[in-house]
Image (tube, rainbow, N blue to C red; front, side, top):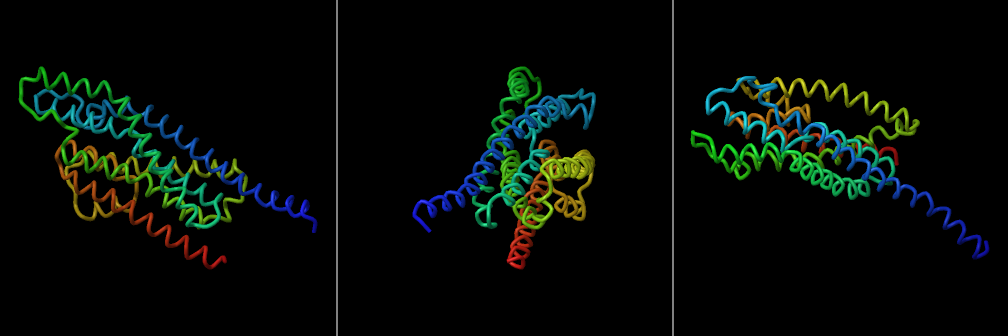
Amino acid sequence: MSERTSGGATELRRAPHRWRVSGSWLAVLVAIVLVAVVAAALGPHNADFYQLWVYFDPQTGEEQYQNLRVDLFMALTSGFFWNQFVALFLGVFLASRLRGISRALVAAVPAGMLLAAVNLAVAWQVSADTRRRLDWWSENASATFPTDLLAEDGFQRVLAAGLAGYPLAAIAGVGLGTLVAPMLRASTVANTLLAVVATVTYGGFTMIVGGWVATADYEPVALLAGLALLPPAPVTPAVVRTALGDHGDAFTVAMLVGNVVWATVLIAAGRLVDARRA
């Protein structure tokens, strides 16, 4: 084989690799846009969460203070529930495009962290009105309540656990993508439709469960364990219960443990299946 022919063959082998890498970057960019859009769209709803879902007519100073706390915490975590699905399917996509679980994880983990940072930045921006309500409260409220809410340990813990959910969901997605790799050979339209249907169905179910638990008055261990097995169902209960001072740390732990367990199980299963295929 001549040098020119050998060089041409090498370029042909490199071309699919470059396509896979560029496709991965494009997927990350699309995921960033989706995360930003979802967080921005949910901001106004979350900023009025208390009166919509907890109690529609707060009257006393304590009720109004709880109203402010719930709305602020929910506004600052806008997108933490639905955007975990974006991180999950980004991990699935990366697993299908990059050869080997290790290589996919190297891309998925920082991509998940980037999605978390984007979500937080957008949520901070769209929560501006709610934060101004906090400033007004601190200046005009007749009752004395703590106003430095963002410095509270409980809020910082639930925020950290929620942000950690993004890279963990991306890791879980890599494992899931490895498991269902044969299915991903179908057309892009079919895979996208399947992802949308799965997200709406499972996400709708877990959103209802999480919303019900967030406004309930009990928290048995079995309930916490059940929520941990249904990520991202614990997100809303963790945020709302933390704002209300009602066992928020227990739900925060359930949220974090559930994400860690599913990421570990799916990656382990993916490695096992990948090894058997080899």
